[in-house]
Image (cartoon, rainbow, N blue to C red; front, top):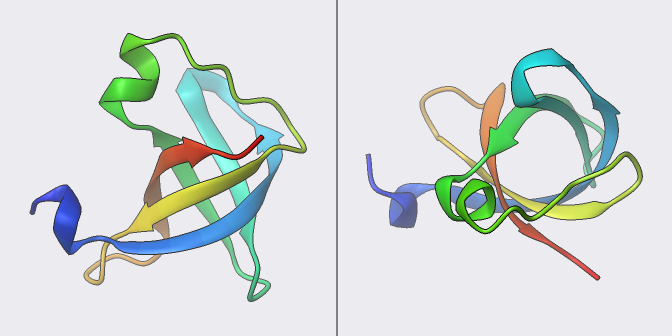
Length: 72
C-alpha cells in the first residue's frame, strides 16, 4: 500500500517505547502504536513525548500507524 492510501490523523505522543515505537493518542481519543516514517529517520527528525504529530493510519489495520510529520 502506498503512503497516499493512508488516512491522515493528528494526535499527541504520550509514550516513547523501545525499538522506535511510539504510543500516540489521537484527537478522537483512541491510542495507537506508531513508528517513524523513512524520511523522518533519514533526516534525524526527533520526536519526544508531548509533540503534536500527523499519523498515517492504514484502513486495514487501524491500530498501527506511521508518524509522517511533527508539528512545531
